[in-house]
Image (cartoon, rainbow, N blue to C red; front, side, top):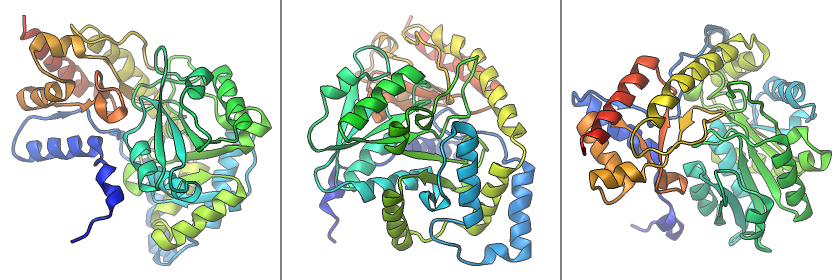
Length: 393
């Protein structure tokens, strides 16, 4: 059998792999505390579920919709964006997809020719790199000189005349870093000057804590906003990971190209899920605020516990998303492991705590811990990790 050569460079998702391994161990009877998955542990709010049920019972969910989504859902998304950022899209610029992940995939497929580059600030979500490769592009990792925020000097050091786009993820997965308005403005102006498209992944935009604020690329200079493709969806803010609804908001030319790809790749997202998303965007936003407050409480409890673990370096408290991303080489060396990867494997096998090695996010000296689970699990996980690390003494 012949397998496409481009897949030789593509790695499976490390987060999904760890989550699956944890599930297998749990099914075999192991006591597993899974901090590897980026999934809210809350149930989808009832009004959203009721909207899907009503659509099914009325028969509205029985048929194809437009490949890019229900017109009323695209209009609701455009209104949601305008209310939050002030930037106005027509509904023909909104492309609803099977999750925000597929919005990114369709976008990269639409804008990249063989050998085109995409700047990917590190650490970065595991699928950016692989999706760029699948689209025939070249990932261009960008490392900040200090911390997790790249500057225009960092971009200048990596960009080439084949660079077509830059991905900015704020709040950032895996570190929880949030870029300031000034930092985004500098990057946005740089991208406009260099004719580099901004891909602004704002999937965690509602999840910012402790008085910190979020700024969208669309809130900046109109030239920056016009040079931006916004990626977002309902998975994180509304606890709807299983419903698989994301979207891209893009210049018309790009939206049309994505629509062509989607029409042949997937067709429309599930109709029932679209009616649920319509309720999410037009109904009460109180569940979003309630879940955000719960995540903030978990962060404020979990962060000091992890920071106190010997050999774990976590100097800056995350401002958003629901992850911690400590450097753990001190603990790895103290325990005698040859890499963070082997440390993470041993931690899972001996304590039942599942983390994701930082290599998946471009930084092999780190690990990612998700606090998108209940407080008892977080406290117990911190205790098990602490005891495991202290076993070297």
